[in-house]
Length: 279
Image (tube, rainbow, N blue to C red; front, side, top):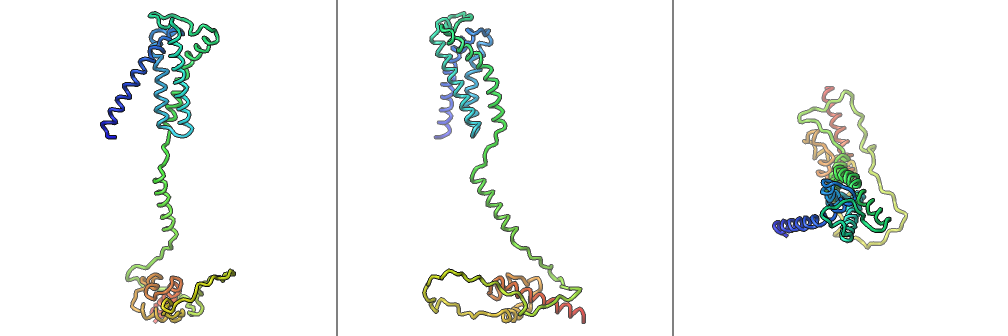
């Protein structure tokens, strides 16, 4: 539906509601005069009843949850009360007179008392329920949309993942590594060994023989061979370039072995630097 059609629909709705209010206003004004209201009070009485119905409808469109159900109950209650008073206005001929003074709303006393109680309690109820609805609308917090929640959760997860990544401090370009005391250099055999996965007690399912073409042709290198190869590859590298990722790419090995080789190379560089300073 385009914008012009929506505008015409809203204008038609306003016209229908206005005419319906005018019909109801006549009946409610006469009922107010019958229960003792003066001319001004009787004129304003329909706005108290039907006006709160409109307020409750708007609040029901804005509120959610229990507050919305409360607004719908108020709307239903005042709609029923207005219907009853309009119905009584149609049944009692005395209410149609030009000058209406105090009169009965029903011949049967209990029914008359109940109708008078209903008509006189509606203004008080409008004050209470209208104030409550306005307070609920003013304090209403719109719920967050699902897409917004998912985006916030995704950003939080990404931030946590970035915080979990270790930060590697690297010296600035041209900085020399000087240590006041020589760091102990462990032989390559004493470096921590790679963790080996625990053997599972469950029998493994046979998957068939691996074809020769699918097997790796690169032999498994020991840590000493990796260290020797790394020495030749990184001989011209500055100290700040000796990172685990750079060594892993150069040697084409696992991150764990690359870290071991990096620590060994850094230890050798520190030992050579201390020896050069001592000379």
